[in-house]
Image (cartoon, rainbow, N blue to C red; front, top):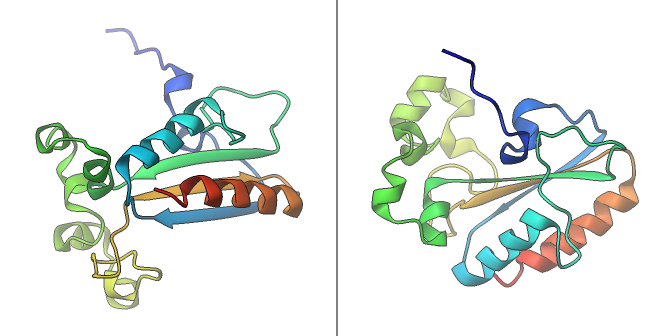
Length: 160
C-alpha cells in the first residue's frame, strides 16, 4: 500500500510545522450569531475583507508577517450548524470535550491542572458561556503587527 499524499493546503500550518516566532495571541470565543461567524470564517479561509488568511502547512516564502490558525470544540461546530449526525462522525474524545471526566482521566488533568482551575472559562461549560473556538495568531517579531492584526480580528468576530 502506498503512503497517502498529503494536500498541504488542507492542513493548518501549526499541525505540521512550528512557526518559530516570538509573539503569539490566542482568542477564545463563543459563537452568538452563526451566520455572521460563518461569514467571518469564510473571509479567514481566503484572506478577504482585510483579514489574514488561515495559514496552511504549505511552505511559504518569504515568511509572512503573521500566521493564523482556527480550531473548534464540538459545541462550537454545533453552534455553526453541524448536525448531531455529522458531529457523531468525530472521535468520541472530541465529542466529549477536554473537561469531560473521561478526557481528564486520560490525559491526567488532576489537582491544580483540573478543569475547575482552568482560566477564562476553559473548563466545564458555565452560565458565562461555552468555549466554541480558538483563534491563534503568531507574529515573527513586530508588536505593531500583533496589535494591528489583533484589532482586525477582534472587529471581525465582534458581531458573531
